[in-house]
Image 1 (cartoon, rainbow, N blue to C red):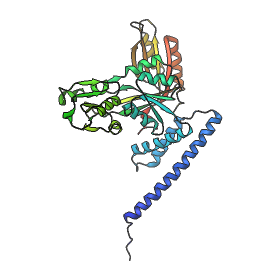
Image 2: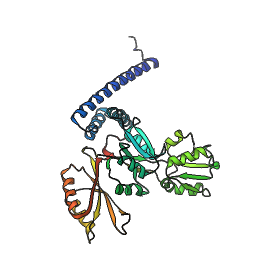
Image 3: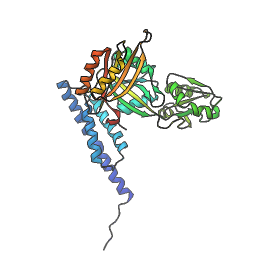
Length: 366
């Protein structure tokens, strides 16, 4: 009986080529369907982004995959496909804290994919201003870090500009010490944003105790400085290494593993409910005892899960504060709507900042 001949490497590669050809053909077909949907949405004046639909797509694909293809990679691949198809309906521009290769830039690419047009800004305040004036459709800004806490510039900007939160993305932060030569002996100054410097404080103290640090307005700016000055080292992202042609001195110099930053996507409108959402509010309290307790009591009575509360001083009003609240649920949910109506009655100031898909449950997980 003749033994069955095993396929050789050339044959298997031929199969892979054929599969790749099918994938490209299907991608072309998919983007054509997406453009047709864009036209139909324009005719009926429907929003371009349907977060519930996208979440359902991901849930179906993950179930269909049955664990064969790595789930994280599957989500990442389809995030790029879905985002590219959505952007084919309408090209978007995204403002971010620049220059290129900041962690905010990385978060923007993770959320919007590579098909969006990214516009670097000099400050978080400039990102808000650009979006409010409709020079760009969206902005992306850091709001809190798992180690260093809230980014106060972002919270303060919500008090100044009238925009809505459209989404969120979490980015695990790994800090690299980089310079032109890749030799630690050449570094006479370490530059970075204040938060990365703080997040690497112990490593710098132990390994470079006599080298001064220089806070600058972004990690991208630090990388630019290192690219133009051989005596400057930068704490920067992995994207900065490629962007500015720098050499890695030491990878992963953060003091704590699991360092994660939460970023918010801002724009003109919040999306419709996805089924797993977060709602953000900005509240001013009445000047009376127990005012904050009244707010918390309402949330408890309405069975609303409070995810975050943070106070910030009101500029020009001594000892006056506004409170930022994150609640689990969408403004379209009955209990969230009812709770917000009750809060309006007891608060001196009430602003709905937006309802948007939770990153932990969103289709953009990658």
